[in-house]
Picture: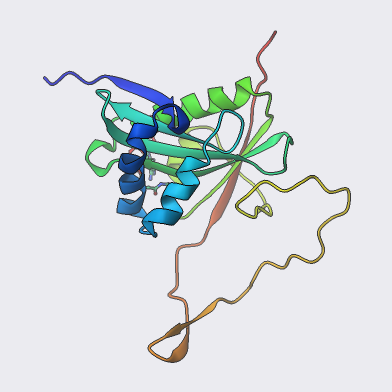
Length: 186
Ligand SMILES: CC(C)(COP(=O)(O)OP(=O)(O)OC[C@H]1O[C@@H](n2cnc3c(N)ncnc32)[C@H](O)[C@@H]1OP(=O)(O)O)[C@@H](O)C(=O)NCCC(=O)NCCS
């Protein structure tokens, strides 16, 4: 049996693996390489943080991105959770998520949010509970005392296809989940 040595590392602490991480993410969600790399380069000790699951010191086999929902606030958004196709079903996704939760807990955060289309069972096994959708802009916002009334969630999304306006293809419904964290006892 081949020896498998797994580590969860912060992307900013193993920048030599950034292209590997980029390729893993693009294998599931194709996007421009430069946009993807830019997002991975933003990883830092506070937030946003990209955690990568590294096999035998050189292969990136998993990734998860953690972002604050408001700057310095108690809530964290979990995104881009992925395990390399060849290694799914081995418990590595669960391990990566548990390490991510520990990382977040140690930074004093209280609540995790995520949304999924199709992986509901995975998150439910990890103790996530269905919740109302939250407003998340892809970057942490400065906390505001006033509710943001300008933002509107688009109800219809149109895009141009072969010169005509077409509705986007019907997709699986998106389910939102949350999980409260127990804070470490000092
Ligand atoms: C979702 C994903 C990260 C799961 O990783 P994984 O390593 O295959 O999952 P694990 O082997 O750690 O599974 C942990 C548990 O969840 C269960 N599970 C995993 N995926 C599941 C699913 N889609 N539905 C129901 N249960 C699931 C497993 O059976 C296992 O249960 P057990 O603890 O009782 O044995 C992986 O399938 C993946 O990368 N998918 C493509 C990208 C994606 O869709 N990401 C989610 C974006 S929201």
